[in-house]
Length: 279
Image (cartoon, rainbow, N blue to C red):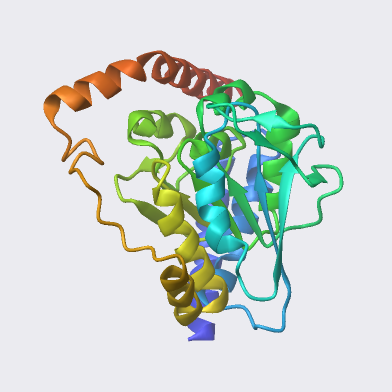
């Protein structure tokens, strides 16, 4: 099995290089894709319990705190691990609804992480050309076991150059933005593509975090956490997705998100144009 995986990985890396040479001149895209592929095998088995894991999640102004705090509930309880809350500095930031969050570790002081959590929210749009943030994501992705995006955190990962040729999901209002970053959009609640894991909107971050834990410490540990969290969702209404929501509800929520959606589409188009200009 190990030999077979090695052969398949080698073929995939060669293909990735051909594709990248054709598409990119920007240097930083090449090693990210290369290293994502090379470490893919590592993510297929649980990590030995005696190996300490470093997990970190980014916070930022106008984020959706549930994209962070939902996954935090499971990730912070991963056996033999430590969790870091990350931002440029240690000043408080406020989420979209005004909740104050405080980083305990700056980007500059962060060690290499095993898992990087990238949440979303309306504030994501202000970071789409912020090289300090994108550079941090890009650098961590080089050696992380997993980069895990929740909601529109996937767009930040796209802006950092991580989504080319990968399947990914995001909040349903932003699915049409993903192709601008070379991603293959999926309506699945959680998508696993090698070392990149993405969850859809907001609450799906809990689902994805349990999957991350299962890949790090095994399914039994993830199930124990799920039971501890009493995570057995039975929503009071069948309006949690565009497919099930009443037409009037879908129309109203879509209209409410129109402004930020247009901004995200514009950012995606700008990224694609800049990428083409480097070819």
